[in-house]
Image (cartoon, rainbow, N blue to C red):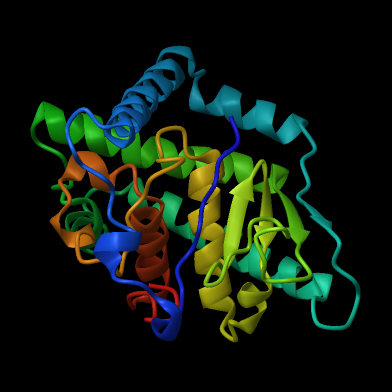
Length: 257
């Protein structure tokens, strides 16, 4: 099914987080049923990956044998939406993800330990079975899925900030509906790291095997820090923030988080 990922608005055009961003939690509601399906689907996706995975060396050789290249549509060589800027942001996000995935393999890394606690509420190296499942079976698998899938991404540059153009509603930086639609607001970001943060968020939606596809809580919402580990491992912003801070040494800016 198509996935939809609205990103955040600036402070001036934000609504109250409890009315716009928080997940509905009323027992028995359709929204709660969808959340339950998302969590179940995420667990099944990870279980399938773990059951079917090949040895690391074999998978690496298989990936090398497949020529993948991300695609950019409807962006010109100049003007307001030059393709070169998409290329730069994609390259930065790919570098950040590669570094984060590599460093996350070292459970003794004190920065990894601190950020795993901060963004996923997990102890690393994990001790309990619950922590092992969430760290190795969820977080590490999502990072792997993002790394594998990012170069098969197709971006579409939307000309107007309207729902008719890639569902670019006011405040949206990017939207994932099969392809990743870059809204005009994405181009207002002046920092390449901020632009990369948005791409990492969308990659988590699109390529993370157990990440929420419909309802989500953004990192600047009041409920984000209150979520349990079981929910945080399914939040796109948890992955984007974890990767961002692990690589840059600082938390995402208030512009995007």
